[in-house]
Length: 391
Length: 194
Image 1 (spheres, rainbow over the protein chains, first blue to last red):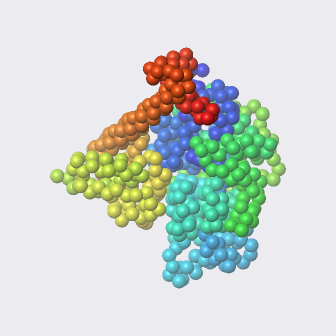
Image 2: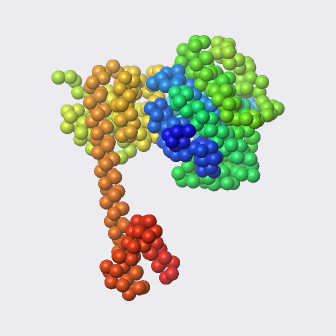
Image 3: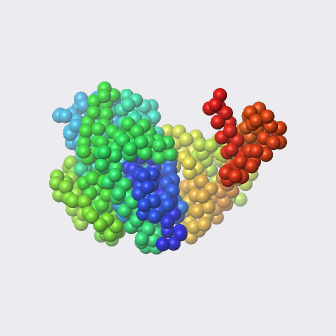
């Protein structure tokens, strides 16, 4: 091991799914693997991507679609990135203003807890606004190549809303989401924890859906490294994966939750109240200002249900969304390049004892609320299932 | 003479933005507009229709600008981030200085390069200025703490000012600490014992 091997800089965005990186460092799992890691808190995904690409970071907490877009050279410089470990699955929520919530509830033919009910109701609200000549509804998401963008689009399109023609989708930095909802700049948003909870606590938002109600398994953030860095530092990479895997297991042990929440709440880490983080990890979320809560054991998966092992089917699904919405052309070559970003082989090389498969997981490993089962080898069939698409 | 470029600066720090604007004007760029980091950032930028957008990297709104890469009916002209794959050093220097540039339309690389270089040098001088101010402020505060510690020792141990300072210095050397750190311990201890 050379001296430069041991010192690493990891960039992260203060969100609940940065937990594995933060705990790996602050609880000493990285040090136990002989790694001296400096965590660098960042303010934008563009910064994380650029600093990883040019080598200012050795690894990063990164949006899964950004890792794929960077490897495919979409919208930016082409730098091959690989993901040897998943930092989180799910964890996002769709939150709407009280006015839009009331409109959707009034237009719904059933309980809006069902995402298909709410999406069809949204289509009616959108149509009515159009007839009246009102401005289209505006929704916030965090990045063009983001799970939030694709999840919002998937949900509303399933109900018959065209996300490019019928509504406006705008990029908003997560810390600005709540203000934008309060001042009417947006009518709703899809964002990661804890920002939806902040809007609910302020009484300006209703959580309409956990994204896990729309897609049972959705790869969210990955531990991302440059492919060339991984090739040059194979041993360091395996130790980094092991440290993260141990951290993920520590986080998911309910006996450790208070300690984990306290670590993450520190001002230089996520910097929000430990209580809010605890509720996020537990999947007990306040969904309305009146205090009503909804619980889900899938709200955010960090080390459970094999969420940490990268699944190329997830990469294929994300690439499928890029094609569906006109961000990428469809080709067998790009599909296999996208799948190759997720590296279960490196995960397996690092982790001696694999987690057991748990019952109740969707057979296609996606579990979408609408459409046929996803086939990671046939993006064409996935696209053909939808009327609303750009490709 | 080439037509003047329209440049937008998005910077949360008004002093740094002013320094950059001055620099650009000195270099002959007359169309420089400073934009606050507002919730209507994209709409304002579309209204100004600039050739170049400069944004500081401490700004979360950088992700908002990334939306301009997407095919959209709202965009009048194509936008690209200024990343010259052949000139890795320039990109690294910009990220290191804390600034990023986005260019609109098919501008000549050389014209942008000059603007980016100017940007990098102004951002770096601003960072140096801030460091110097910080160091000066710290030095002033440390001197105040040392003076208070000297006063406490003079009263408690009936020492002269020189002897009090010598005691602080000797303790610092023995404990391998800075004089200001030892002085702070004396002040803290004295407050606890009050």
